[in-house]
Image 1: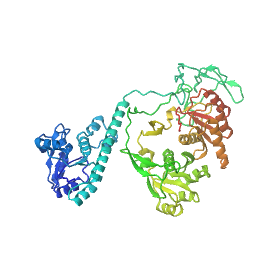
Image 2: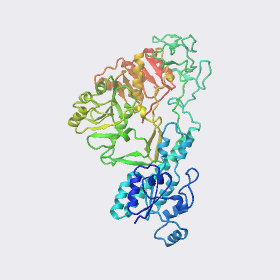
Image 3: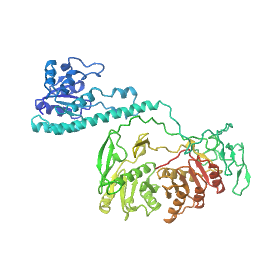
Image 4: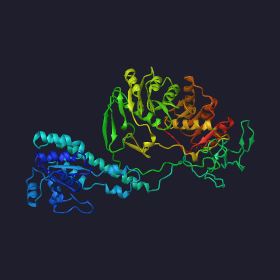
Length: 616
């Protein structure tokens, strides 16, 4: 198909002058609009204004330029239909054989912090998508170009053929054009759903895994809808004493079994300001789960993803697999990975890589993590990533073989030496010392080495999380919630020490990334034992203790994190007998009193977070 006339209207001016010069050199007439026409004229290229074709000026701040029958008739007319050609002749409409459009940058605009609705709406292109769709529909006779990345190949073919584009090229360009308009409209729909959802009331879920009423007693004595049962099955009010000496309705047993009123620590008595007494928070369980501010998910979910990698195989060799990147989404996580060394990737590699990166992003200090089958089997922090790697390896020196390993600082030879003789599937870091990368290339031929950003502060505040299920897709927001210092509540008689609080924070970050039911034992710098993916919590506790002892780690003077509440005291008894001195958990069980009593009997400190971290 010979190209005689091209309409060029682009917001992104990259490469458009070179393209237009090439078109003009082939004798192709160029019709253009506004800023594009001005740029081309300034570059010495002959241009015909759209207003000269339509007989109408651009109007309404440029909102109406190309929306005219003399433009769309020239694009949509079928060249094999005599009545269409007669209509063009009768109405003086020039045929348009090539449409070059780069849309307003809507996606980039709404990605900017603080953008207003008015600013976003002005970047919704109307005329551009209309021309693109018209040209793509009529690709039997018209070629459509939608991105600067296409200019070179199109111009090369035109030059080689003396101004013609093949049917195969027009077909390909039409597919890419419809994909672009679909992506563009999907971005607008997502943004509009967010604007609408942000102004709608959000239903609040019940506290940390319960379905019971959430009203609780306050210091002023207001009542809850339902009293919590005690171990004996009776009901008791839940008001608790402050350090000032107010009393609770029922005395609490001591470890010796006698009963006496027990004053609980206040924030001033706790080891950190983050630990607050239950009295200050309105009594035991007096908090509700407070999800991050969220938007309603749209009635219709439109996603466009582009295949970034064809993978070696899926979860198993008989399954085909590929990795797709969401079109228009920011290049974060695996979308920003760069392979420096090693063989091709498989499906499981990327699942584990994603899990390892998510865990590593929890830490600001130098850290190292080890993931196996998406569960943490090692994690540590230290003054350097080399020291952190030694600690993370020691967390489980057996499971690290075939694992995914990451550090959040420049990977140096100390890390390489820590991994000497150990096969790992993937090793990743934000950067590499040249000598470390050279040594990895020589000594770890089968290890896939990646460079990827590891700074959580560069992530958007809210990320979508999609998962396929039989018959549909589940959508939620990624669990990016961190501990809320103001919501932490000391529920035990003893408050945690400063050292225990540091360890509890570390343990909580790791437990968030272990499959439920999960129990994690740690120090302030190192994972000691992980019990993950268990069907009940007491088995998770037993597994965490067993794994630690099997690899020769001491469980005494550790702390424990539980991703959800203890439904019975048995799980806490297991970690207490192993030597754990403090526990962090969401709280919210109807048997919280039994669990707290178990902690007090063993002089353990216990913190309730009000935040659950189930992971399935």
